[in-house]
Figure 1 (cartoon, rainbow, N blue to C red):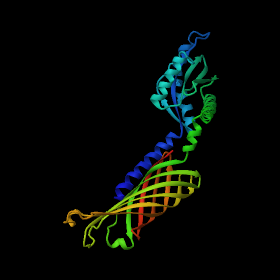
Figure 2 (figure 1 turned 135 degrees about the vertical axis):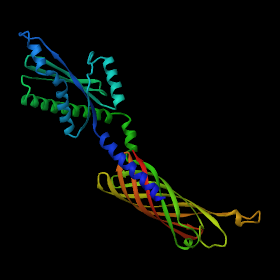
Figure 3 (figure 1 turned 180 degrees about the horizontal axis):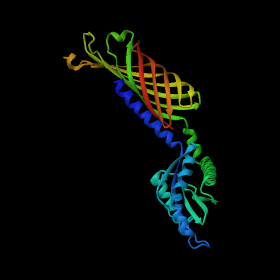
Figure 4 (figure 1 turned 90 degrees about the vertical axis):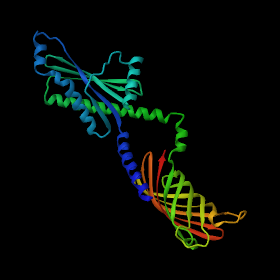
Length: 353
């Protein structure tokens, strides 16, 4: 049972961690530059420029700048080996096209532009399009060289683009903070819900009657401060006599509900240990199997409502929105005046808002 639970949880965690690493970066689409050859005094200058392979700069300039942006670790840059038409830049139709492009590619920004060759001079114009903000910034540079000086210019452009993208991101964060919905969001901040599952081991007098079995526990958690929170947890346990020697075969079901205080110590941003303690009530039922009840009219079940105690310790792995837990707990149910003591081991998965 535990093996079937743990392996899928590990796979989910690894996939979530990989997705989270990418989702934490701003996605930028970077297109090739269109290239234009302008006429100069010498009639053959345009042909000479083409002969020297200036067409190559349509792709090498975007590639170099994109690589520099990627190296900062802030941006998820996707190079597209095609041109993006920029006619009507700033118009409503233009931004509708950009929004569709952003939705289709899950991107926040688009970079495209042109390179104009006039003799030995290169003029580079790049548009940084902020899809969500419906605006753009134009960055322009010129170079009379195609070697080291050009490399310095591309480095300078990459730095300027990085600053502008940072500025766009801060503007977006400010708009979000000013949103009237943020107050409602903050109320739900550090709220999680999920389910734990594992195996329980019966201790005390009931261990002579019932077999160890599996349990499942849905939970809700709300963090008040970084190190303390409250949770509500519901336990469902089901067991029978199994291979135990008893005069009459029975089945026991237990539903328990506790309100818990949770103390969490974070070793790292995404990894910590949590201690929980709580108290509540349980409903326990013992069913007499039909095969052992040949006389009609006899009572086939007994029910009891009793105090219920829960103490647990677990490791927490948090890669938002996925939350994983691995731990153990002690549960004590004063079932019909006798202590039903349980030791559990569990793993859990939840969604952390």
